Image: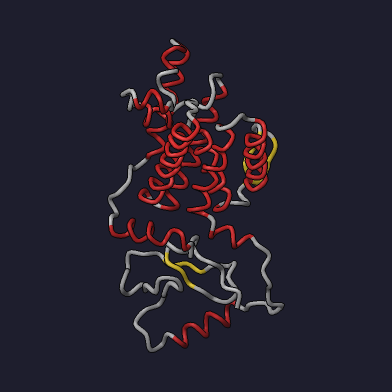
Length: 276
């Protein structure tokens, strides 16, 4: 289980109504609206970006509008916005509304904090947006669905994990080619990603595997024998909840774990794989 997220998981379970349902839908609508504003009157766009000096003068709306600043000014921007929507809505379905809202807002808050820290320490009033927050969402998507294929340029089939490596190169390029202090924005976005998905990256590290092939039929028979005296059929190997105590939950078995381990719907994609 992802240790850094223990307190967030606990909060989300205790406050299931926390969060903004379909958050990315509203963010993308804001992207399109601001794109249209920029096409009509580009001067107005300068009042939507993040600027510490302007915020301290009372333009507090910039704390919100900078997160919806469009990723470009050409027609291809609509394709990028649609891609952001697909990624964000998929993450929300996978994690739940509360946890995805936490992810997006924490990325925005970290960006805001970085902007003010730089402003107060160095006196640099630089304009920034939340594009690296969006790009970091793609890292999370790639961790969850590394082998999913998409059509690059609508023609070339490519797996998400390879696009994630390309995304990583863009982050590195941004660090070395962008002037300070904007060049550290990729680092801030990656920090947010690691807080939420750092534990999941452990599953991609080389692990010592047993040469023995797991016979799922024998393992299933063993589990059924052990459960003959129990009143439940499925029990999560992480949180211990059973289908008897929580009939509303779905339980699944992880094919990447060594052995025959069951997990509830909250932990099937949120656990360290067993290597027994």
